[in-house]
Image (cartoon, rainbow, N blue to C red; front, side):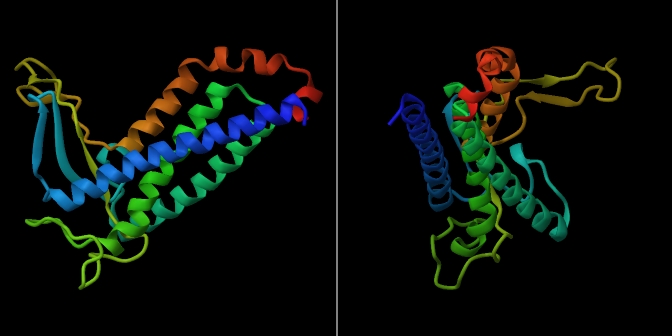
Length: 219
């Protein structure tokens, strides 16, 4: 077995391990939140800077909504399609002996996408509602919705800076501002970190990769 095959096997295992760790952390926290907190409940971890705030959304990352029932189905199907493309691309990167850090970054994006798909696809079927109550896993009366109609669970909230815009400020004068306002989950973080690292270090990541001979990349 040549060194190229050994490297690819090692990167394959690393990709699988990365995906497994992210999914385990993401789903463990979401299930704990669903079975221990009601919607809107908060736990202050570090004062008012880091708060576990239980919320759910029908839409995209960081709590942004994609309106309507059609929008929900479209977004779920789009996520599944995107995951298939990312899986194909990740396999291609490993096979072509791409830099290890690139494989890890794409694995982070892949894991995050799967994490939110699990919520959308199955949470409506295996949990009941969290309004004014703590949800049950596999309730006797069935879940709150059907396949692909589940809500994504978000909980990580970092309102590090808060205040009000001054009176003279255009458009938002005297209005409250909070940074960072969006509430998100581990899957969202995984996607964001993977994308950020690829964009920020793009030249460094692919510098040596682009210099490789064609036959070395293919074999």
